[in-house]
Structure formats: C-alpha cells, structure tokens
Image 1 (cartoon, rainbow, N blue to C red):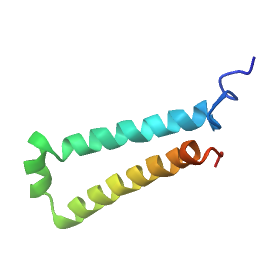
Image 2 (image 1 turned 45 degrees about the horizontal axis):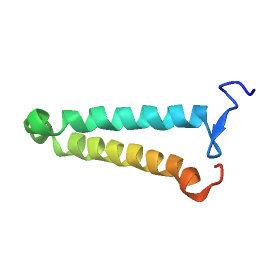
Image 3 (image 1 turned 90 degrees about the vertical axis):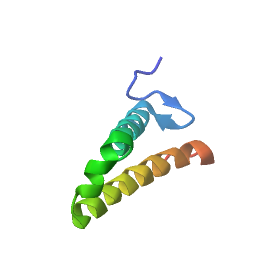
Image 4 (image 1 turned 60 degrees about the vertical axis):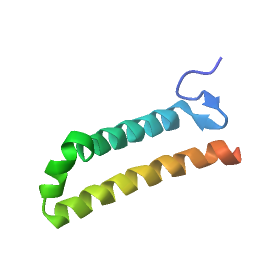
Length: 77
C-alpha cells in the first residue's frame, strides 16, 4: 500500500488536497474579516488596503480553482 505522500485520489495527491484545504481555509478567514461585523472596519481602510485585500482573495480563489481543475479533467497538474 502506498504511503500518504504518494496516495492519489482522482489523480490528485494528498499534498495537493492539503494545499487546496489550506487555501480554502485562508480565503474563508479572509472573507470573514471583511464581511459581516468586519465589513465596517474594512470599509474604513484606505483604498489601497481594500484593493490589496480583494486582490489577495482573488489570488486565493484562483489557486483553489486551479487546484480543482485536475479533479474536473481527470489529469494531474
């Protein structure tokens, strides 16, 4: 039986799944700080900070999307 580092589920390694999970958790935490109760504080930040925060959220979402593509296509990236 293969070890955890080489086990693949749908051609995606556990390391890749861990990376996706990490990015999803980071994006969730980031969005929690700029929505709901945190939105007012976010709105009060200077425009550059707001732009950079949203840029970070976009980058994380893109990393998640890119990491999910092998699952949809059935191939490993």
